[in-house]
Image 1 (tube, rainbow, N blue to C red):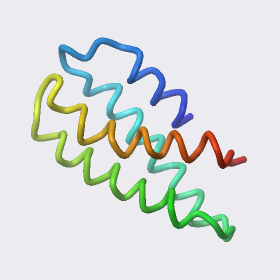
Image 2: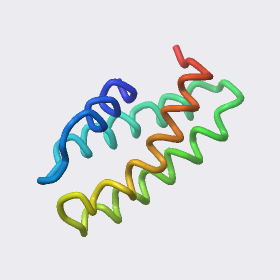
Image 3: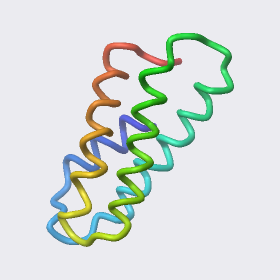
Length: 90
C-alpha cells in the first residue's frame, strides 16, 4: 500500500495542494512501520529509520503549502520505496 500511494504521489502534478496524497503516503508508512516493529522479524532497522525520517518530513510539510510540501516527504519516502523494492515485505 505504501508503494502504491508513493507512486500516486510522484505521478500527480502537485503545483496545488497535495495534502490528501501526502497524508495517504504518511498513513501507509505508519501502518507498515508498526507492522515491522510488531513482527518480531530482524532486519528492519533501516526502513524503520526511514519511516522516522518520513514522519519528521510530514510534520515539517504540514507547515508548508503547495510544492514546498513535497521535498520533506519525498526524500525519505523515495529512499523507503527503494528499500522496499530491494527488500520485499510480505
